[in-house]
Length: 150
Ligand SMILES: [Zn+2]
Image 1 (cartoon, rainbow, N blue to C red):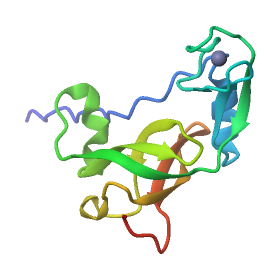
Image 2: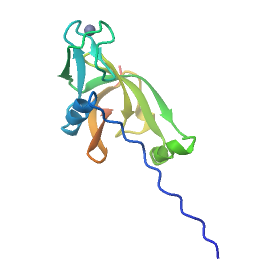
Image 3: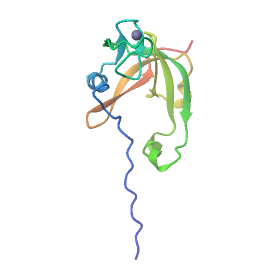
Image 4: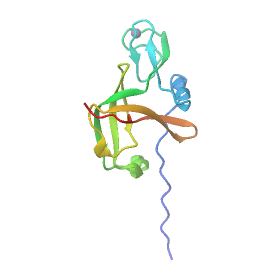
């Protein structure tokens, strides 16, 4: 009798942690959301990089953020296409969103801990850190308790 070979589990990709991004991931593992801020022109820098995209200064400082924000835009993922993304299939439906953080920068993440139908533009959210694996914690956002969209 011939048995079908069970398909090897396909895991979600982990972020590549480089010397430039390492402080971000170290803070995330401690439950803190941080972002580079330019000491010369005060711009927020995202994604992490060696120099400011606005003024070119290399004087960037890792700065704590409150982790609070509002949903600027979102999409509901209801299907994954292609083998590389199959690791996300068990999360369907899930929400990918742009979050406008209270301090100003816009951040792309997932909205979690609620159904996709509950997510709305303008909804108040707060950061929550999910351990992916190997000590890597991903910042995601959940509805701020007691909040309602404007
Ligand atoms: Zn700058």
